[in-house]
Image 1 (cartoon, rainbow, N blue to C red):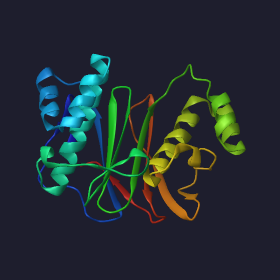
Image 2 (image 1 turned 90 degrees about the horizontal axis):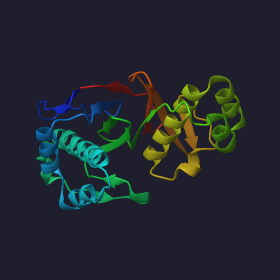
Image 3 (image 1 turned 180 degrees about the vertical axis):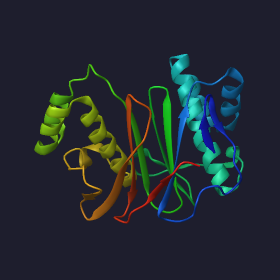
Length: 225
């Protein structure tokens, strides 16, 4: 499955590698036609449809439907199932889980990032840069001293890079962001207690920063099917 304007396009079943050293990622725009939005909506389960219908704005509803629908298509393709057949279970801290695959997604602005691993716990995060955000103050409050100094010198781009890495590790961990914010994350391997997570930055359009993390210290390759 590959990203394209207006959503995602299908690929052959089993398109994602089963190698633990591979993580597959998709970058998806929520700029979709009414017909494509309806197709995504049809893949959602009853609970997801209710959540979508409760959203206050048309834009928020569209973003929710595209993100959740795209995740269903990607995971269903990997497992050789229909998107509507998937039944999520809720893990620790509300993280959706599904036997046989590890998947995570993040949404910022008009883009959704999806990451899938066959075995290792995965976390993904994408952030749109916000020039008006007081990143120096936020870094001083939440980040280690060395990172706070780096943000003071490098501004919003450095802040977004560190923040996405922290979010990605947190999501792979399945824990709370407060556990990871005080930890240094610039290195390839981030240690959270007794557990290690390898994290890498992703290439995304200008104005965004993104990262993906997998459980374990072993290196991995990022693929975009």
